[in-house]
Every structure is written in structure tokens, then in C-alpha cells.
Image 1 (cartoon, helix red, strand yellow):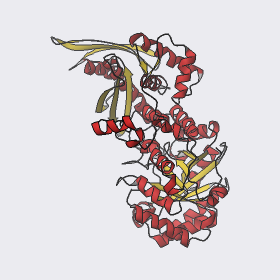
Image 2: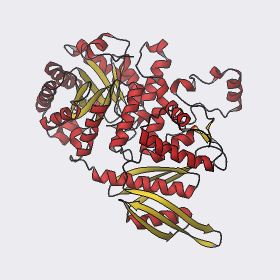
Image 3: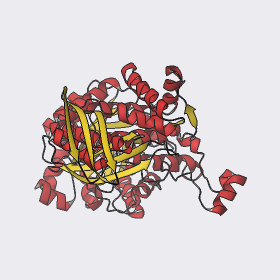
Image 4: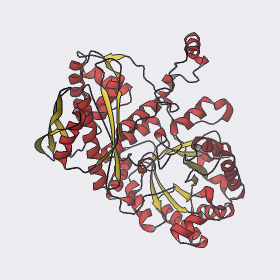
Length: 525
């Protein structure tokens, strides 16, 4: 499908743009940091998902964010690439310099409009805020015709003042007006009325796109977004898996499938390729190391599972008795044997592509080598095993720390010990340590080699597939000096999986420290 332009979509009342902010708002949440290669990989997947706009980052916030946005703008085609900016001239200029090579470039500028934000955060008068908004939009329009303006904390702002600010933005050339529920405060009926009020009172409202940006503090982000759509919003800002600040953002997959499945009720369509929803969810989970909760709508492990005898009986007779969606419609793969030790590179690559992973030659070679190693250990290789291989071998580039070998001794009548060999910044090092168990001993050896002072906040073990030869998947969350990161690792040996996860987290921590934002607090709508 082709994307709809501003002028077209303002007339196409049955069409809603999907504005994905996973790489900006989603990444701001603790534990969701991504390096440049990971951001680019996810951006390409968002293009396959066919979102309309990718908010690639906040360019002025750090050199790393600027470079990531610039790389995405240069290499990703299809969606508009958007850079976030405050109303300061330097922000606007940085956003443009980062996105200028995009096939379609958008600048998204914002300023807070609620009394508490203007008084206590900005220390600006209402008149100064209106002037700043107009000036920023006008400067952005000097670079691109696609300019979005957001009134941060709009749902706690005075409605008449919002009309003043948005009118100034329209007059200055804004083409999209975003109405953020920044702190997840509003409820559907109230949020819907706000959109109706703005559309009624703004001169030129028919010539702009109204956008909803909802946070999930009260668990109402998706419901609020739908209410906005029913009252004229024709863009929704959301994230994969609903990740984001605090309780997260509106979940893209839930909005897309609600509109898709209930087109009979809403009469609204999107351009989202729903078959790419599950691969996008899995990719994000693997990149960030944050698992999706089992009961998560659309993409959770239990979304299409049935344990109740009554439900199972109904599904066996007619699947539609208890399933309103076909799992294939959102790209959920069948849990089946797909490859074995004699499978070749071509079959391996094709199955990865079916799962949503398009790898370059170097990445494919690394993944195929790991697959062959696993195939020697396991008789049955499932899709989940392949996804784990991609997570372990692909998303870690570049790395400061690398596991070379892990050897442990443990038993009922001996103190567990471990010897770990690593490569640290190109140098091979080795250390031994003891612990309360083999995992603790291995991690103690890694701590000794890396000198880390990070505190383990969470340690979770899960089996990827069934059987005693199943790969174990370990997720760890560590914190050091105010930085919280998540790591993930898998192996048929749970000690090795734990070591992989811990080192993965340490690499993320090193990246996070190297890319400290240049502004004190990276915020946005």
C-alpha cells in the first residue's frame, strides 16, 4: 500500500495514520536502551510493518541519538522519519540536520501548556509559551513542509488556552496537531470531548491532522486513543508492546487490531501489515531484553492459548467460539519442528525471513554457525530456538565484553566454582570464582573480570520450548549509577545462558554510559 499524504488523509475520514514512537518515547523507559545497530534493525522492521511515521529519536539529546536518527533517515525508506525537538532554535536545527536525508522528513516540536508545567518547569508565562510555539513551528517550516506541534500535558491544560496555542501553531504552518495525555490522566469520554472542542474552535482545523498520544498510567491509553479517533483524530502515536515512560504508551498492536477487527463498528482503516505485528513484538523484546507478559493482548504467549476444558472443547469444534482472531493474521508462527542438523543455509535463511528477520551476509553467517552448534545438541529446533539465536548473536553488535568459555563444578557435597574466559576490548582474560551455586559462581567470575559494581535487580529463567533438551532463556536486570538495563541470553546449559544474559546487560550498561544525554532530562509529549 502507499502512504497517504497530509492533504489526502485530511480528506480521507476513514484512514488513521500510525505514528510509531518506540524508538523515542519507548526507549526512554528504564531498561529499553538500544544501540545504533539495534535501532536501525527495528526501524527496518517498522517499515515492513508499514507504519506511516517513525519517530526515530530526540536528536539534540545526545550525539548517539543524533547519529541513530541520521542513520535511520538515510537508510530506511517508506515511512516518514521524524525527529523530536523542543521549541529552542538549536533543537529545531539539530532535528533537521538529523532527518534531512529522509525520503520524507518531519520535525516534531513541543512545549508544555498545563499551568503546573508552565509555572514550575518552564517558568514561562502563557503568552511566552504561545510565542515560543509559533516561533518554533515557523522555524521548522523553513526546513520542511511536514511539521507536527504538540502541547505537552494537554489533558491538564485549560481548553481555551489550548485553542490559543494550537491556533498559533496552525497560523505558523503546523500540519499535524498532537494532543498528548502526557501523564495518563484523562479518560475516554473527556479526551474525546477535547478533540471535538478543538476541531470546533480552531480556524483551519479541516486542513490539519489531529493526533492522539496517550500514556497508560490508568490503563486507558488504548481506550483513550480510540475515543480520540471517534472524535476526529486521524493519527495515533503508539509503541510496539506498549513500551514507554512509567506504565508505557498506547500499544500499536492493540490499536491496529481493534480497528482492523472491528471495522464494521469504527469504519476506520490503517496501513499496518498485521502479519508483521508478532515479528515486530518479538524483535523488540529480544533487542531490549524485556519479555512480553504472557497475558498481553494480541502478542502475549497466552493470547491464543486455551486451558479451560469448556474453551478447549469449543475451539476443537469451531475455533471462532473462543478466538476472535486467526493467529496467522498477526504473524504468530506455528510451534513446530522447522529445521534439523542437516538443514542448509538456504532453508535456514528462508525460515528466518518467514519469522520476520532479514539478515545481512555477516549476520546470517554468525546465526547459521550458532544454529549448527545448537542442532548438534538438540534433536528438535523450533521457531523459538531460531529467535533466540538471532537475539544472542545479532543484537549484541558492537560489544565490549564477550564470553569465550564457561566451566563449572558443582554438586551436593562441594562448593560450586566456575572458570570463565572472556574477551574484553580485544584482550583474552580468565578468572575463577566460587558461589552459592554454579550460576552465582559464574557471575562472580564475570564480576571479577569486568570490575563491575552493578547490582542485580532481577533474574528470571524460562524454557524456550518443551523437553529436557530445551534451551533455557535467562533475563537479568542490573542497575549501576542510576542506569537500569536488561540483558537476555539463551543456551541449553542454564549456567551459560545466565552468563550470556549478564554479559549482554553489561554491554548495554557500557553503551548507556557512553551515550549520556547532553540535556538533563530527555522528555517529550
